[in-house]
Each structure stands twice: as structure tokens, then as C-alpha cells.
Amino acid sequence: MPPLVAGFIAILIICSSSVWAQDKYPSRVIRIVTAPPGSNHDWGARFTANELNQRLPQRVIVENRGSIAIEYVAKEAAPDGYTVLFYGAVVWLQPVLAKTNWDPLADFAPVTLAVTSPNLLVTHPSLPVRSVKDLIALARSRPGQLNYGAGGAGSTPHIAAELFKHMARVNIVRVNYKGSGPAQIGLLTGEVQVMFAGLGPIMPHVKANKVKALAVTTPKRSKLAPELPAIAETVPGYESQAAIGFFVPRKTPPAIVSYLSREIVQALKASDHEKVAAAGIEVVASSPEEFTAFMKADMARMAEVTRSASFAN
Image 1 (cartoon, one colour):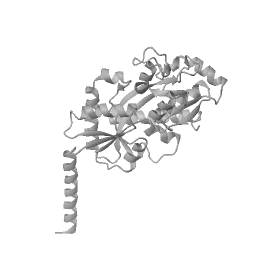
Image 2 (spheres, rainbow, N blue to C red):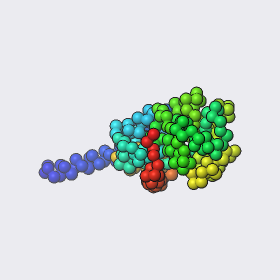
Image 3 (cartoon, rainbow, N blue to C red):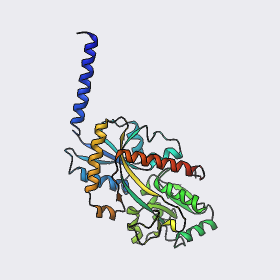
Image 4 (cartoon, one colour):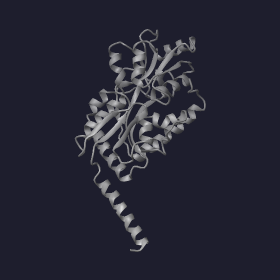
């Protein structure tokens, strides 16, 4: 057989095998890797996995890898659709703020922007404030003396707090934690005085009077916490929400990305929205293209903000 013909046949075999493998997808367990337990990431990953397990022929499990999940999926996971990342804005905003080992557009294929959630501006009960106005006044009277907890550069609490500092013209010092769960514990124990925390995880502590909730970070009052004012009522133009989505490694075949997007979107839309709302989460369920456009717009907005605000402390 001539070498050229043999080569052509080999290519056909490889392509046919690839198509066959995609047609058979999924043929084994799919892992959703995400942040530590106790966060909106973990809760959202699990309710999505539960819905997918009623739809897909193979099991879907959740694996809590913490902050290393992002780099793991970007650099180590095989692009075969069996490792899916469920993570928030740190994926696309941290590279705007500091050098990272991943590129949000070059290393990931967005699957869907799954959910959004407002943060609550909360304080330790010992802090003598009852409103956003009180907190701003106290922080201005004690520059650099108050502190807030956040789970790392580029995390939603970090972005929300630094945006607040910039727009309210206050100096509140960041204390780093390895995730939002440990940061929340720091607030409960009084190790930090202020936090921008996910509504779902922090609300039980608000109701138990273990922390004080001052406001929500949505541009207007949120239907998820209608009793709380928006920070924007005191700081005009302020807005910061948690946005969490699904990603796969960039080289994942488009057919598999489409399959995952379709199934995850349907699972999200079929979920118990009352239960989801009770956790402080709103379902978005976007297309991959809409999610990509959202990321690019958010990155451009944050790049503009960082030109006039310090995110270093």
C-alpha cells in the first residue's frame, strides 16, 4: 500500500475513533471539582450533581479541591469532559489583579454561567455599627485599624471589599484566609471585624445573632434578603455579586462542551428554585457564548477599576 494512502487511512481511523469516543460520552464517572465545603461553590456543585445524576447514564460526583482546583483543571486534567470545574469569578478576575498560572480564556472552555448570589456586608457583633453609614464613619475615624476577612486575591469577597474601600474612601485592612469558610470562622470568632460573605452560608449566623448584616451588594435590594438595604443606597453605583460557572479544559472537544452545557443548563432549570433561593442563590444557566461574553466584560470592568484602586493589601 502506498505510504500516502496508508497515512490517509490512519487519519480516518483516528478521527473515527475520536468521534466514536465522543458519541459514547459519558462512559464513566464525571467529577465536578470545586471549592471547600461550606461555600456557595460546594452547595451549588452538589445540587447540580444531584440533578445530573437523575439525567445522565453515568454518576456525577463532587470533589472539593479548594483553591488548587482552578490550576488543576487548567493544567493537569485531561480535556475529555470527565473533569469539570465549578468556580467563581476568581477564575477570570484574579489574572486581572495578579500573575497566575492560568489564563481564563486560553486555558478554559466556559460551559455555562450557572448561578449568581449577592454578598452580605456583615460585621462582628462587637463592632459598634448598625448601618453602612456607621461603618464608613468608623473606618474613616480609624484608618487602617479595622480589618476584613477574604479567601484570597480575586475572590468575590476580596473584590467586593476592595470595591467598597475604593468607592467609600475608607482604609480597611485585608486578612487572607484559605477559602471563604475559614474567613467566615475568623469573623465568628472576632479575629476579623468585617466580611463580605455569601448570603447562603452567612445567613444562619445572621439569624442566630452571631454576626450583624448591614446590607446587600446588589445594585438594588435583593428579593433574597428584602429586609436589608443595598450598599448602593449609601454608596451610589456600588455593585458586586458572586458569579459561579462551569468550565472544562480548553481542548475539550466542542461536541462534549455542547453536551455538558445542554445537560447542566437543563439540570439547573429543573432544580427546586425555592430551595435554591433559600440558599441565597439565583439560577442563570447561560450558554457558553453568553458566559464568555460575561467574563470578558467583567474582566474589562475590573481592569478599569484596578487602575484607580489598590488591591494589594
